[in-house]
Length: 334
Image 1 (cartoon, helix red, strand yellow):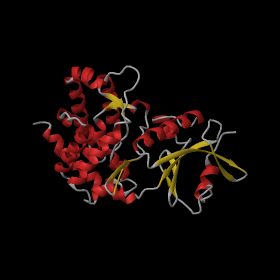
Image 2 (cartoon, one colour):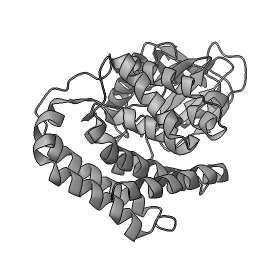
Image 3 (spheres, one colour):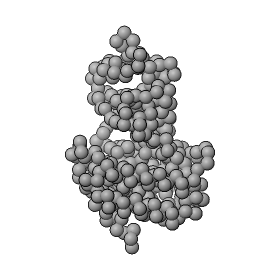
Image 4 (tube, rainbow, N blue to C red):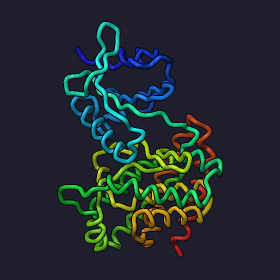
C-alpha cells in the first residue's frame, strides 16, 4: 500500500501533536506542510508534489525525502541554530501521532523550529521602509558571520565557467513564466548580457572564480528575519541539486540586491556590503556588481511577479524590482 501523509497532516491541523495544546496555523507551500503553534513550528516535506518532484528534486521516495530533510535541517541549523532545534520521527498509530527518534524506520521525519514573528521578515520590513543604513550594515556583518561555517569547500571537480551556463539557461526559462510582465525581448537582453559576460571572462571564471566555489544556499529577503538587531536566515537550503555549489559571493548579491531594489536606496546596499566586508574580514571585488546584480534581479523580479498572481500584496514589490532592474541594466551599457 502506498504511504499517505494525509493522516499526520489532518491530526497536526487539529493540534494533535504530543506536547501541543492549541490549533496551529497551517501553511501549505509548494513542497511542504507547515504547522505553526504558539511557540513551535513543524515542517513536513511533501511526497506528492508532481511539479517539484519532476522539475527540481524527487521527494516521493521515502529514502530521498528523508535524506533531503536531514540535509536541509543540517544546513539551516548551521546558519540559524537558535531557530532550527531538532528533527523528529513521526508515526501514526491508532489515530494518534507518535514522536520517535528520526531513524530510517519511521513513517516520516519532521523539522522542528522555534517560532519567529513574521512581521520581522526582511522583505516586509524593506517594503515598509523600516530598515536604516546602520541596520543594513549590521545585517551585512551578521550575514557574513553566519555564512562562514556553512560555506565549506565542495568535494569533487568543478568549473564555474561551465557551471554558470545552465544557470543562465534556467533563468531564461524562469523569466518566460512571467512574459505578460517582462517581454521576451527584455528578458533576452538580461540573459544575453549574462552569457556574454561569462564568455568574455572565461579565464577568470575557469580559474579564480572556480577556486572560490563553496556550498551555497537560496538567500533572499523572503528567507531572512531581522528582529531586535539580529539577522536570522531560514529555509535557505537549495531545492535543486545543481544549486548546492555556488560562487561564494552570490548570496551577498542576492540579499544585497533585494535591499537596494526594495528600499530604493543604493546607500543601503553599500552599507550592507561594508558590513559584509567587516564580518568576513575581506574586501568585496566590485567587478562582480554588474554580473551578479543583473543575475539576482532577474531571479527576484520574476519570482515576485509569480507570487502576485495569487497574492496581490506582492504587486508593488514586483513593480519596484522591475523598475530597478530596468534602470540598473541601462547602466551596464555605459
